[in-house]
Image 1: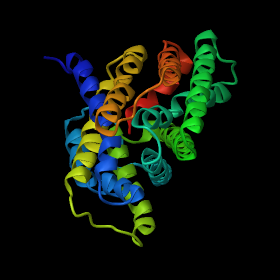
Image 2 (image 1 turned 90 degrees about the vertical axis):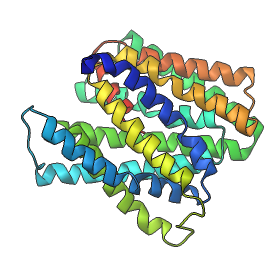
Image 3 (image 1 turned 180 degrees about the vertical axis):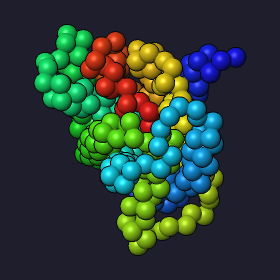
Length: 299
């Protein structure tokens, strides 16, 4: 079986693994930012080993050690990713799992805008429709959260903020993509992100009583989820990637309903449907859509 034929099942598996991340954050018996730290720190050794293996198996030309300027940008990307995770994990504790997953992917709609600015071009019809659907869906979800409680609304806003730093992370990645191998980039950014979060978490509860949720979070979200999606994204068209990623909020919604009693109202379903439609539209073939594919290679 060729690697290309493995791409779609790998994408499904990676997306499903990422969908369990918010649940594991809630199960962890450490503060949310501390769970973000352990998600990164516990994954560093495995990602480093994977980067070495990938480098040895890769026959494509490229620098074995990235240039110092490239490493500096990768380090900055790691800091952005650390802030993203910290905000996202805080939001997960304050809103529904479904909303946390959707809002955390708001970078899908920030990156196309970045692409239009760089290209100095107006968005096409599909991209404009996607941005309109996304904005409408997010407004509906935020309005519903405000009706439920101020805590839910704050959680949604934290996850939206996380999505903004998620976009900054991938903008930084896009700037150095040609100068560093994907798995090396992922390993270095993960290590820098863990180092950035360590001073923040040292004053609180650092060591959990139960390591199981944190180990599963590191393996499932940071190692398996990201690793499989990075592999699959090199073989699949943007539309397939966008559709496959939609399993994440769907699985999170089911987990939230069954485990935490987070029932979805019709307005929630409507908002989620609009955001889901936007995710599909923004990944339709085209230059702007190709720019957004970078957002799908992590979390």
